[in-house]
Length: 323
Image 1 (cartoon, one colour):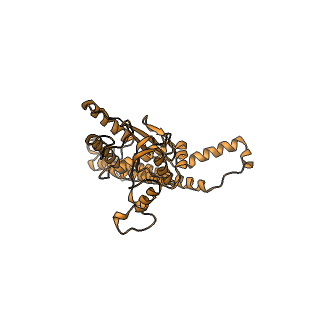
Image 2: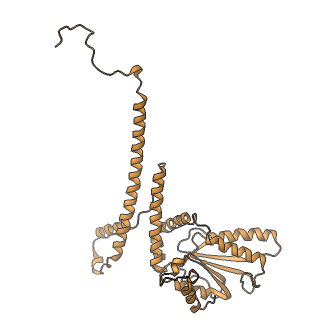
Image 3: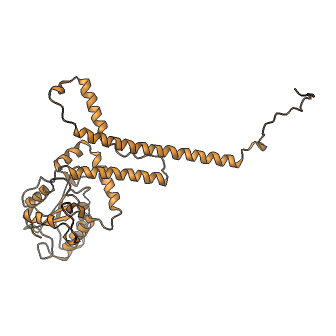
């Protein structure tokens, strides 16, 4: 208790902001804190997506190892069947969900890493199962096809050259510098028509590029070219594609003059693809293959780089081709 109590003398010891304005340091600190919180929330979302994808991929692999149910157990109640069907849908690998939030460079790097992981997983599945199983997989989960080719486009962007462009260039050069069926020219049927089968075409880029080339060439030149491209893959990504297992395509025997496998010899039964190519190729037809070297170096370590793929070439010869 004070000795003298005079009204107005006892002022409370509180800090008063001059002019009622918040200090610059405090405002800057609050701004940084808000930015830090936003980045933390975005990072948490990315990490949760990555964890969910990895968890569900593992769940999917474990589900494949379980034996099928016996016929007796299939007579369960409708409630149980509905519950099991929902469980199977959850076990499928989680797709990459694009966020509308603007990501920082670090977050973009993390998302790219996650997309790359999923691309590698799908790629491994397609290389380690038969083409028949791959067709069933894509039919049951069509989004896998789109995700795979989105990742593939990202991979190709870092390559010095796209093998599809190499094949298109080969067609253009040989079609414009030599006559069809002439030495050095494109192989054709008796009516000089060139028929190409693009096996495992992806998004059918080769068919699109060849069509554009034909439209320009036939418009400017009197000597018209007749080139037809059949494109086959596991999903009808556009109107140029026919859905088929490339070990058995809907084409007659000896109906094609060129068969192309551009990074498409995926699956454990890839030699069936070669036999199918032999079936649909006309006499003097050509088989064009572009594949990564590691695909042909599984049985041994070749010291000479020129010998890489020699075993595969020998297998092609056994199927009736010559090199």
